[in-house]
Length: 182
Image (tube, rainbow, N blue to C red; front, side, top):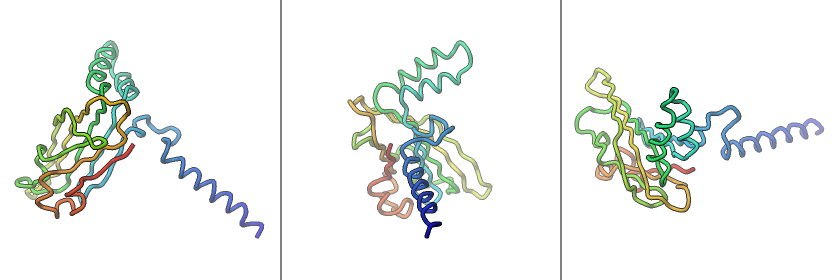
């Protein structure tokens, strides 16, 4: 009986640590990790979103070499400090190269706290052929929203094309998309 009290204390301490881990980045973690969310949307479809703010702009500018830091910070701040701004990367693994509805960047949609974006820009698309007529594809989007009084707490995204082919993302995600919360 006396041996159970220390075990219970350790278990409660671990539960407390686990509970706090969701609220704060672990010690030594990159400050970017608190701003990034990742979700597996479907088999072979992974979305990673980074929410930009002034701190992340400062971190990105600080990583720039020498005298360019001020210019880079000003350019990033103009792009990401006015309203909610996200960098969203959609990775689609082992897909047919032609005719796959998820590979069309124009079909992907985004919302922040239920609001439509003011601008969606495809900033990169990479293809990695697998050698059998299929490919891994990564699409990067810059998604910006109008300024509001509060920081965006969630980002919802999906593919309009997937609604007609529910097997691509599953019925629920095809209809409602997937939500990432901060």
